[in-house]
Length: 423
Image 1 (cartoon, helix red, strand yellow):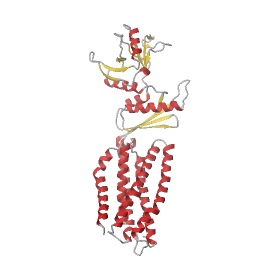
Image 2 (image 1 turned 90 degrees about the vertical axis):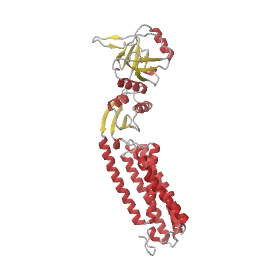
Image 3 (image 1 turned 120 degrees about the vertical axis):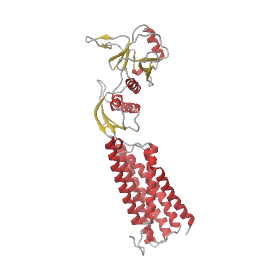
Image 4 (image 1 turned 135 degrees about the horizontal axis):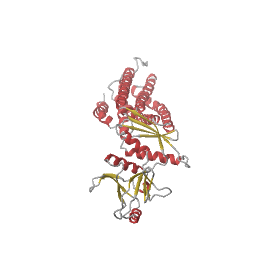
């Protein structure tokens, strides 16, 4: 018996079990959960063409990028944004937050216009002058709008900075002592009289519906998001309650746990000590998958969990192929150590070929799929790569160390019956 190699084998086993038991729960908490597990809501927008401007691929791409930027402004962690059927944008936001505010920021454009004059309609409302180009629009703003309170008046204000300070200086000089009419989405927001020439490009707007800090904060975010290249029509808005997401997660976790226990027992019964080594490599596989998901900020959904469990099955399959090759070598009269070495070599190509074809299938699903299909494909491809690392490298290294330690010499410990007949 070679205690050095057996000691190395035990160190690997204890390291895998200790690391997994000690940090798995903290690692699990760092993985962002998807809408179906955490709750939240699902929005579907239709990109609509404007008059005289049909939809183009470049415009649709710009609309998708604009939505992504707007969603980031809501502060939601790990959103899912996908283009569906060429002209629909689906937004999945997990967690709890102000739904109405999020819908407004994502789908509406704060169209800010500043005029030097205005017209009063018969109903008493003030409107922008027809056929007159505005002095400035929201496109002239920098994306650093903020909100606060005026230290002198105590009013809630939105603080703006224009891209061209010289242009704003010229306008305030031209309209010194005169009102400037600021319209938001065609409605008069404020019409302050210019008190002084402003040379630094800064200004403040207030009044109208900007009486609360929340309204000012929302407008600032909308202005920072910029204009949408096409208008968006909200087609559907579906809520997923946190309790429903928690129930889905609980049911899926129980199913996954049952599957893992059955796989572990199957390997132990069929392959005995070799099955134990396979189970340890599966523990390492699961831990590395969680570590990868956390490091890459992969949003875990029900389909992702399904891919994770499927990956466990594929990792087991790699071990089974290896062990059956080892059995074949022992049936041919080779020693236990020689059978382990040659069996691993013979199994390697088969394992690589089977995993490669599945990886290609996952890549195709990611390329052509949308939404949950892509999430499943990402989880599947990551699982395949990690299963190769654990099943081919870790499991093989542990099996060789244990075999060469000469702790056991009977083929029975590797799933063989007495006399070299496979069980």
